[in-house]
Image (cartoon, rainbow, N blue to C red; front, side):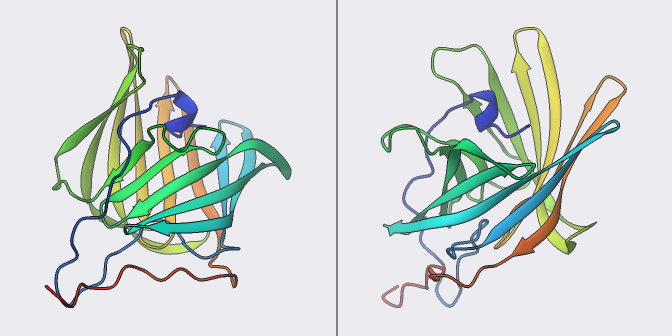
Length: 210
């Protein structure tokens, strides 16, 4: 519901992954195994619903993992699904029906420091979002405890602004987001996570030549 893609905010894609320091492995903030499944519970006042993402295809090029997912809401398949662009630089997202050459929403940037921001803007629109990277926090959810990077999002639509807080965990992706609409509190939390047993795409390895 509060994904940036659902708001139509499109900006530059996450490009080629940044060099990985020698002796370390990059953390990827979305699963890259075919069959991996994430189930989220949305609560808005007295209303609740579930949505799930299941990885159906993974392609790798130049250190960027293009992860296609099927999306279901309350058990019904939703079209289109999503394509996530996962790399050492961060996490981007677009609709699976968008052309490959189109830009994606940068949900998380790992190339910026804590407290630094980036802007997502839809082409030809005055609507945009400012995202600020926060510190890692430990949060407890129905799916378990996670150490996750906090991202504070301010969505601007003309004179109106809305604020959304999101948390991303390595290997899992978005695990929680929360927003306030007047007196209505809206949250999405990770209920279940299955890492999958399908084709595994390994994380980028350190460049031994560096």
